[in-house]
Length: 476
Image (tube, rainbow, N blue to C red):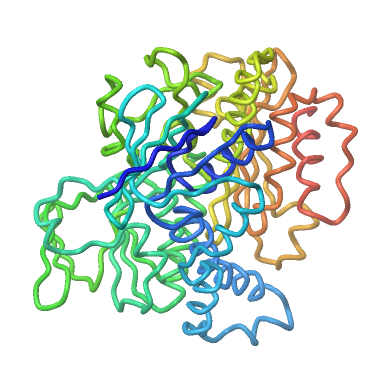
């Protein structure tokens, strides 16, 4: 065992996209920075989530779009080329190697220490390297925990014996299971059901809730349900798994109603938990395994001195890569400003405040049809006590929708704060709507008055014309 000691302005524990951006922003502010990473630099998004999952889904969505177009539909009627799709997924995941990420980190002059980093006290981190050495790191100004999240597995009897899929296995599997059971009804569940059904699995979804995508507008989950069922997915609502076992090479699933199901693999898509069980939180009086509560500048509350930050999934605010990178840009700038003794602009929508985490979080679900949303849902708006007008429109009535095919089905919802005359939430569901979400994000984050939004003329014939139709409906 050997031990070395190093000092930096900023230490970042966790080298996913969030940690990389915290370090790069701190470096841009003139501070020295180091990233500690125990797996692959680039993290969950690059290797087991965003990139591989969308690589699996893109051929599925493209084929669904092409199948609606006269002249193309016969050409795409056959099955997907599974080998080609999986090879594309492998390329998009850089074959689970991180050399390109390391090259980028070197280009921005951020150091990398590979190994498991643990907090040992104020501004102190000890890294155990793969070789068994200890490296003691000291931060002059800040330590940022950006260790992300992991799959949260429910306490189902027999779970330890079945080697279930989590999102990691679902995005990196190298062969198609004949039968795949998906437990859950959220984003990971519907996206992976979409992908593997199209690749040849017989997918059965076991959903405890009454519908899919329960945190979104109900019509979104209903349209995705229709799409999955049309693709051949067996969806069972109000269904709870009570036991699992693997026998004779297959997974045996017992349900609360006494029913049984057999599958070749089972995917547990039942939520996320923070990666904080073994990062030394107990040395600071915090509870290992808990989400880290932060203020809008990402300082962890309850830690003296204001030196500890938590950025990305680990703080539980908005568990999406793009939102984590937004947080990282703010946190890096905040750390830089505080290190230099500069004023911190932490008022709502200020340079150093993550206001969008509360008001304007965009999301796209890459199913057939797609779902895109930002801001509040109607249920959230109702709970907030605001005076809200709900404006709905049938996307199939927009001229641009007919370019996707005569059988286009979709819906749009806009929530208007009637006291302030601004948009506070938008949800779209239908083919191609993922490309609409940024216009909605600008409207919500910019708090654009509807009288001004009226002058934002959509190009014809595009799906974006739905904005005009929503505003016309609102005006009556």
